Image (spheres, rainbow, N blue to C red):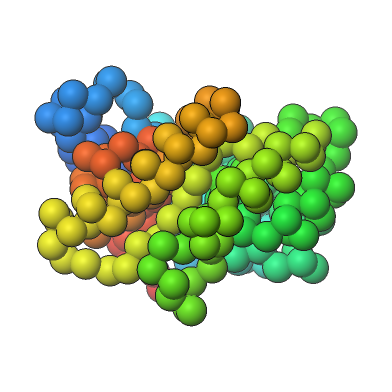
Length: 237
């Protein structure tokens, strides 16, 4: 079944994106945030290149992938589109070269060794690689991230790497269905970024926090980039 030149699947993605963008603008307004201050990052891991192309057609330009091998296939298929690719999964040492050469952002840096390898592999012909440090507040063994007390030292070291551009912080909090508790969890990262900017005289501008189940609380807490997957593409296949 089709509507004009678009399939039902295309229309579903377009409607979902439109609905999310509307809710983001409404949430910004209710929190007295500047219009457009929150960026939507479409988490496309587990979804096909054709679905990404549909989302691109609907106006999205930033897409997040977590698995390098899966991502490389999509990058090749969609190489003619001006997509800004974000690597949002844990970064393994043996994957740093390919990530540095193919992505514009890396959200999950929590070790200087990884930052150094990304810096060394970033081509001089490309702009510096945007970096977010991942913080693990809840000490969950299943999640990557640096202890909050160690963030300032890592940030200071990353700032000395010329092929990287430190942009801010990222977190994946413990799951919680209570929006008030979600908010309190995210505020920790906002406070940490503010302290980092103050202590090191920086102007870091990115708080990568909030996903499909908690993004509204994240925006209330100060998020500048929310990572949305299933609410755009549906459940992963």
